[in-house]
Image 1 (cartoon, rainbow, N blue to C red):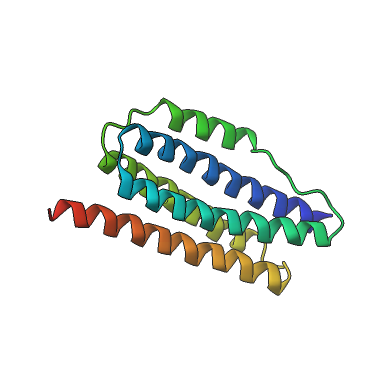
Image 2 (cartoon, rainbow, N blue to C red):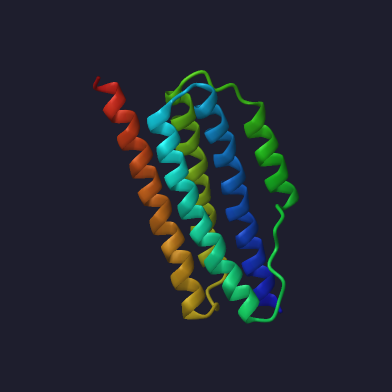
Length: 148
């Protein structure tokens, strides 16, 4: 079913975000950036709810939800692993960039799939709103530390 294929594609984007945030978490733990670790874990929970909601929609269509990344997603995660994170600041800047890319992808997904059912659109809109919230949390974290 076309709807399920598109949802699985969108789900793979979210899996990519989750994978990239695990990289940020690993680096924050390596740097012993406790407050950033807490923030990243909070963000990971947001991604987890997105994965659960979209997986549920796919299962309601009696289809199998993807658990993998697209080839582009694998490449994106690999490129993020190659980066050197020497401070909480660099982690946050990269997290802001990645989240913004996710937000743009979600908006493009809506544009490319205008015919999708309202429930699906509402979930994608919720993802977009959550990405905006994540960006705000990251920016607040950075700004607080810049003013120290």
